[in-house]
Length: 154
Image: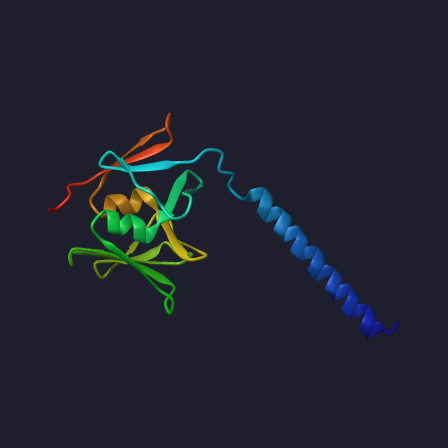
């Protein structure tokens, strides 16, 4: 076997082993969801198209579902990899994937947690975005339920 073939085989083996090790390490550090968290809006359960994900004590939910339920909107910009959450032409928050850097009503700011892009959705920190859109938020730890309340405009 030539030195070139041996080097290629060694490199391939190292890449495969590294990939398996990285996958195993990720699987061990991935958050484990034991029980399903619920969100109630003005006393009624707010259904989300994806399960609520928790990491480091932060609950992440579908951005569009949350924003629309609270009278706002959310749109993902694939070019800038950013999410725009807006409401009533008075509030606009642009958050960037994997970054706490943001713009709130055109001014630079920081957000506590970055949006998370998943297959077919963008997830945002529930409590932070709900409060930014004007909802009062409480958490019932016994029932694993976030309770949001906001005045509904008729």
